[in-house]
Length: 371
Image (cartoon, rainbow, N blue to C red; front, side, top):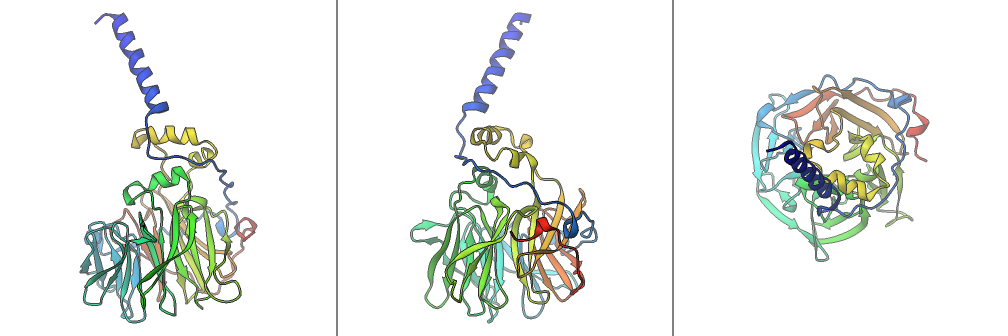
């Protein structure tokens, strides 16, 4: 080839690449919005390394345990990437397979009879008996199939509350929902007495974790794509209504659990990505980002992070560790018996670390307060 031919070929390739970045079809239709500035890292949110000592219980036999549930005997249960739900002895770390769902089990919770309710991203809402029998319960609501069944919580009266993160995308394409920001998540209920599924909230920005309050009067649901928690009232004069509970969290909220010991909601966080926030008002540029090779797209830092929120919506605990060696990403946290049990979409083994002392007083940053 002559030099002129090389130049022409390079120019053509450049034009083709630019055209691809600007015009190639993508599976998202982004909606413009403005991300709030992150809260100040002061007070309870001051940087720390309190998650540095996380142990990994179960090791390689417990791969990618996204969420946990603990039965009456104190055994840890987790759903794995290979579709198994395992039961782990917290003393020995030995895990045994309770059931296989054939999908991707995520959030799970026990009822008073020891039945395990599981949100499987691919299979919908399931129930697993103590002997390991899997019963499918629901895969749609009012004719609209679940796209990404995510987390579940059982109320004191036995009602089941769960989330469909997005009806448009599945577990392998969840990043597309965050980029699109179209509000396709749902909060739902399942009545085990009638088998009926009801819609409580729609239009949620990646409906993720859900947890019923200790007295059963309300529940909290995480909107990952908007850095916030909403409270939905289940009883009382405000029954059936919703309101902001925590706005402008310092990261993307994932699963939520209620701690009866500490009387707080524990929230697993993914760190914010500054580029994602900056691109929020610009749908066209978000399409360009989606067209980039996966390795060029923005990713969060390896920052393990959890926070606790009290019943007034104030952040009262924050444990984190920014390190490539951290238990990242933390996708769930559950407190029991003086321990915090952590789940992760990427790590091997269920994480475990001693819970902070109950009753201490920490300075709360004004930015962490409910508005």
